[in-house]
Length: 339
Length: 222
Length: 76
Figure (cartoon, rainbow over the protein chains, first blue to last red):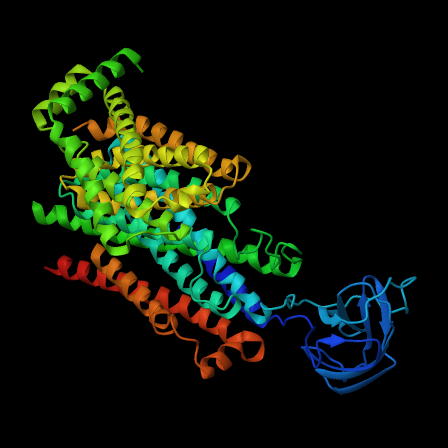
């Protein structure tokens, strides 16, 4: 049977996404220090890493303040994920915040940015300070970012829901245009099926987003333009279903529903595109929020994210065709009953 | 598009409404009594965000009430008569324009009644040269969006209830930006901050009119 | 049939909204906090993936019932 390949492709892509998305380790990172302020003089810092290999190779550790590096005088490795380092902090550092770095040939350079509040500020230091290793780590891993940590994997299971929803809504929009042009009831059924399935993905997007938001932003629901946009589109398509329910005549129903769908879709698109630019957002890439935009999507993330988007969209379209085919069979049975 | 036809239809609307003075009375009474009820609930409001939000909620419901009737009042006979007389696009443009004028007046009236009862303290520091235009643009925007939906609900044979369900999600984005723009104007910020919101509202209004112009003939047909 | 889908969606959203309604006002209890934030928040990912799978499963059940009804009509 033709038309099979893309269904298989969606399954293969999603298999790849689930495997790579869950199996790929996060890159090594420093996540915690025992103290959060340093002053000139001797300082001992105990640091905790995540997915690091300190026991394999003792790391080189240094502080960095406004481009000036202060290397540790002694490093004691306690385990793969913990070390303690002693520093002789000079007086006269310039910046308020000091970062903690570590490097080994296994883990590459890792950093806890702005780890310490610095006391005893001065005019700044001459030069760059001590020399350190710079060789990057090899191997495939996802970046380990503050606050996000392991939840960065949700990128493959939450964000594509919105893409799928938008694709299905666009299909519904297109079919609604066709309804107005041709008055064909089958086009109306196509629009309805697309809306039904897009609502499934909208609900999944909201539910997964809510869970992710709790773990990263600390709230189940935040007043965020993207979230408001999603909620509005769910409301619009719920209203679409209610409008359909209140008109008994199928031809009139098809036409009225198509008009509402076109009207609502265009206004929603304008809203979704313009409003996030006007207000602050917690989402990456909006309102000066770093998360992803600062580094853009990492190449390792992209290698899984793009297949994920394609895979989920294909799955959504597949679900849409199943829904549509059942509905068509149903209307054929209806006609047979009438006769 | 026939300007003369639209002008004639506008005059017709005006004459019809002048004959039915109770329509205007009922709209004004709806707004004033809503505000009066709110007054008994909250007395004088000095908190700017709440004052602002309450005003827009009242105006939104007033718009739903006023425009819900827009296509309800005509019976099949008059519709058929209009149909033979003018092109559907002229009808919807005339009706939209007329509703926009009505809402512009109604929003100013609401603002006056609101300031009278709930208190005008938040408006003392405001840039009124921005706030009042925002209110008018908001009222007109409601009118533009809700006119087509009112026709849709009327064709579906369902009254204001259905229109509210269809209208809320579409008006909500507009309402959010209106609240934001008017809040900024109340805080005394100038055009350089509020301007982009007003621009974006005007853009929505234009798109809405365009869509209504495109879609209405399909709605009209039976 | 159409209502079936809507009902299914409502069931999913109610299911998804359940934790929201419980924890919306109060602070998340300690055990859940620990669970969700333990070992680099991996359990959040587990929860997200499960929600997606459950959502799709509910949809499949709804489709299954639609087809079942169709079969019944066909047999008549």
